[in-house]
Image (cartoon, rainbow, N blue to C red; front, side, top):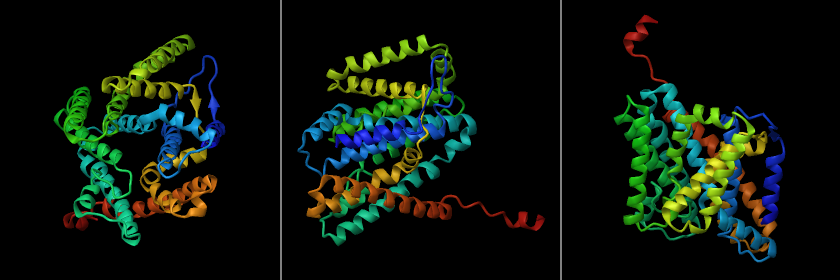
Length: 358
């Protein structure tokens, strides 16, 4: 598995532009650059999930296992951060009209895509005679349970979208209070999940990275003015963040420390992109298909795990699973894109009175 980390590293280097002394990447939060970063992390998520279907045995596999244990839930934090950042950038540009579109364009559309994926897993389970209960299937439609798919992230992101909608609808005249309310409600979500849900900590220990992205968007100009003033300041602040990240690593069993750990890592990645621009088209494609790659990857993994001559050859198993996931993701996104145009993106027809004027 460690060899695939090496391939991922080479993919990152290919097309990369490194900014030298007194130079900074002014577009480090552009859509192209953030999408490529998400491409890196969706591959790491794929590799993490792959371990659930493949038994590691070789010495290089053990080395990867140590890397995976170190990363933990860090593989998802950039999705949350960039989502929060993008949401607040849109709120700054479009205001209340964007917030009011949240139920349809964020919550319902995400739920629709999730449920289409659940339908695929449901059909797969019927074909393979995998047992399902009615409550489990119904709850899987909102991400609370799973019928073979990845689910916790989908439940969390749906809740976070609702939190953002409520917070900014209440404080539509004060955007900063909207972020404060989003942060506070996210903390309430963490507490409720921790105390009453019975779910593992990974269901909630990274979710504050979404409001972190909103705060970063709000303070971006001030952060840039400080960080990009000169290389000494940039390196000093980055070194402090890195030091905190490493110092709290051994104590991250405590939830507040774990949350701090994820925040420090997120900032390290963001600060790193101030000096690096990723220009790899493969990473961009993967980052542009994050949802479908994330939600569908278990289909080929589970299928090939049952085919002995493939499962026994780890290289074939991994490559075939990844290739099949890419093909499924492309087909799924083309299909959902067409359905979105029919259901969510239809232009409102002019009223009869307006037609007479034409």
